[in-house]
Image (cartoon, rainbow, N blue to C red; front, side, top):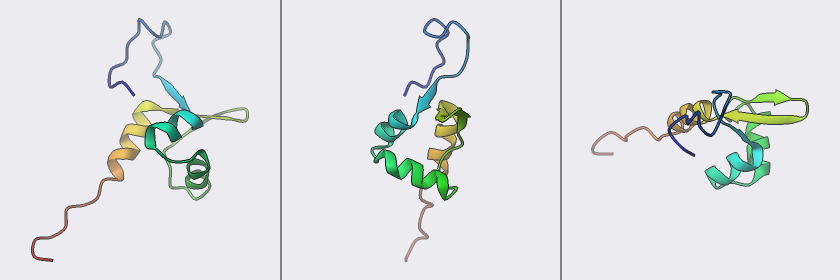
Length: 76
């Protein structure tokens, strides 16, 4: 997943969108896990186009950062 928005690859200047399979591959989880997170309200925000889900790269980045473990207090 590139951190840059390259308009040369995208003539419309729109942010790249990932489908469920691409998101699952990027995160290293089964597609069913992405759907499970979605039904439980735990996954990244998505756009729905008919029956298709698409995930904006920026939303995935935000969600991934929110999953980071908090540092544990010293001495525990």
